Image (cartoon, rainbow, N blue to C red; front, top):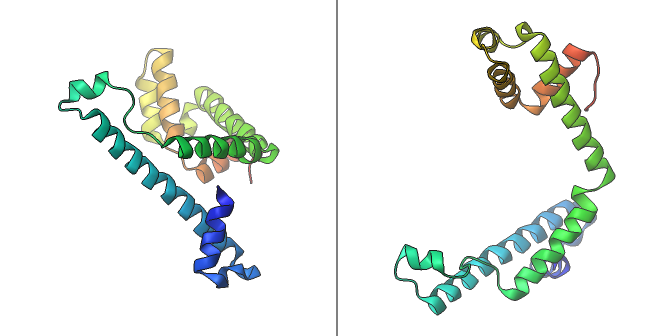
Amino acid sequence: MFESHRLQALAEYPALARLESQRRLLYEAIRRMLSAQVYDVIEATRHALQTHGPKHVDEVRAMPVLVRFSEEMHGQSLALKRFLFANLYRHPQVVETTNSARQVVRDLFASYMQQPQAMKPIFAQRWDEAVAPSDRARVVADFIAGMTDRYAVKEHERLTGQRLLG
């Protein structure tokens, strides 16, 4: 699937074959691959709507799935997902980073539950006003959820003295 899009990009833009243009070639091939999927969903859905001809939303609910890939693209999509899970999502480096990020969130949560005054004042005040432990946990969770990755890493290091992520 990817190779055909890469070859199409090279045919249209031969200069992308140069070594310094490899990243641009990658982006162009991915853009084409995603566009092909979008156009396929549009066309397959259009065909399904013409075939089933729903007249009312209740009819749509009773029909088989109408928004879908064609059979060919569905197969290509499954192959792409398998590739991505094996080579990207479950790559050891990605798994390690994900585990470290989870640990950062766990440590932040535990730290703030023990030291609510370490949060920004508005959250520390909300924590003080909360009575139920679940309400206090919600305040801490809300504070952590609003953090950028960079801020979470800096806070984690400040509170624990550990640097788990770059």
